[in-house]
Length: 168
Image (cartoon, rainbow, N blue to C red; front, side, top):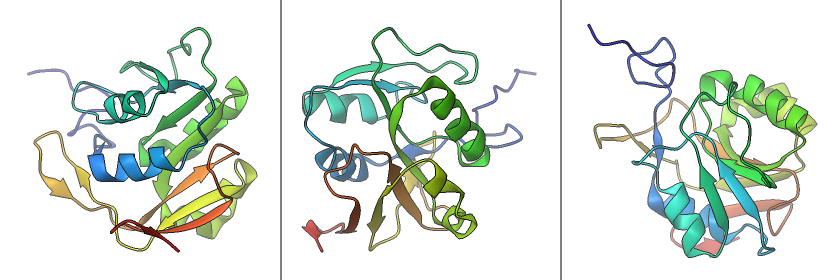
């Protein structure tokens, strides 16, 4: 029997869902345009983040090892990614300990706890539900809608995005 990795579907957490290209593009288009060295720590070859960010001129380094055991690449200034939702608090704590800025997709219901606002002060809401791709390429939706949280890397502090292309 093949060993199942922590991030793999079939693991106890089953957190391997990929951001769809159109959502990654919307998020990337709303990140400040300073030269940034971005770490994408939850990526593998199926992830669109590396391509989308490079297309927009960011210096991108992607790793697919265990985020909690992997050191950021030298010169990392921020993280932009879709972390495993089941470990969102641990991910946020590690980012804070690493003293890195971030732009992350997170589950909407986490806002009810008020915890995310301890980490970031910028929020992007999508008017339509975000969907994700599974490793098998199947379009899937999370149990709850999602939002984007950042600590100063978004162009505005509060955004409502109509996925048909309009900011409102």
